[in-house]
Length: 444
Image (cartoon, rainbow, N blue to C red; front, side):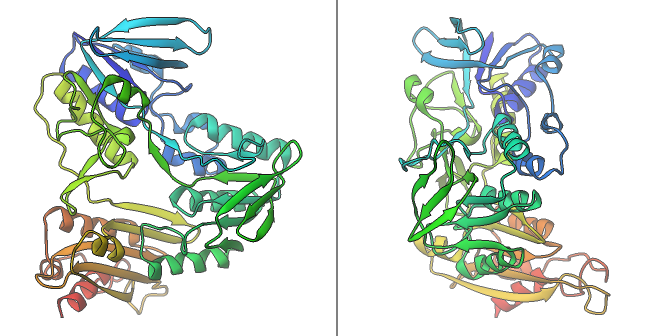
């Protein structure tokens, strides 16, 4: 039996490793378009910032290491066509230009996501970058080393945009963040996003809201960004306005594309085409709060879905339990996290939603330092079922949000949340943890 995996990052290599462990005689070939497999893309802003000395530090395992396990991982090999009738793929060796065919018994599509690139004049000017692959990170790092930019513009106020604002500022640049919406972090509510905007301003990052980019200008390289009614100087631009599922090969395979624009899969990661599977940023995931498929491309989900797909391809019967949309991001000195639905998302989904927001210390108030945490809980007005949570604070946020995520997975109410026996010691938390305070306020 032969498995071909298209895409060799989180989902693809997790699946290959899991399948090989379960079925030793399974022949596995992974085709990866870039020059790296099995790397932590989420670490790229910290490589550019300088926290991670080399790009190789992001790599978990190399093709040579996978070969020792019996998995053939070929980099710089792009799958350009899929034939589900003949069960073949057409592959192009990007180093030699050679084109050849390979056959499969099972096919796993893990082609990930691609950066959204609207047709904006000048978007192809040198000095304008997106950040999806290790090569992207290396290119930005090289531009900084060779061109010594002093003025950067980050287009897009999402996770990557804000992480990169910090990374570029750490490299000595003045940074403007341009966002077409009225707030940064559009998947959070405006009152919580405002706290993040204050933090950016405190670190001399200028935020331009409701400023859609109309053009990039420059003579041989980027020099200006025309956003709204402003012309912002720039000798480096990070363009990060979102990502969409990379589905052209899936469409050629004839699999169903869901309403989200990603591949529709069941809880075993099967597509609608026999012997064709999908996982990671190219696939939908079942949202446990919305009770329907959603598209929230995150690394943790990709690894889990890949592991499920690999087990089932090797004859197992594993099911993916779904997501609640949990995410956390570092913005200078703040930890910013969310899970479930924001109040706006809950109302748009048809819930009769309400919310409470509290501010409480992360430690006992008599400790030398006790920075505040802002906690927002979103819940149904009637039965008080928990729908989501958001947190912003200097410490203690990144793991507290996981408590809310666990409660969402079990379908708890705010009453259930208020009953939790959470740990207490003055250096770590007050006797009434901020989560419990928020749950009690919501219960009233």
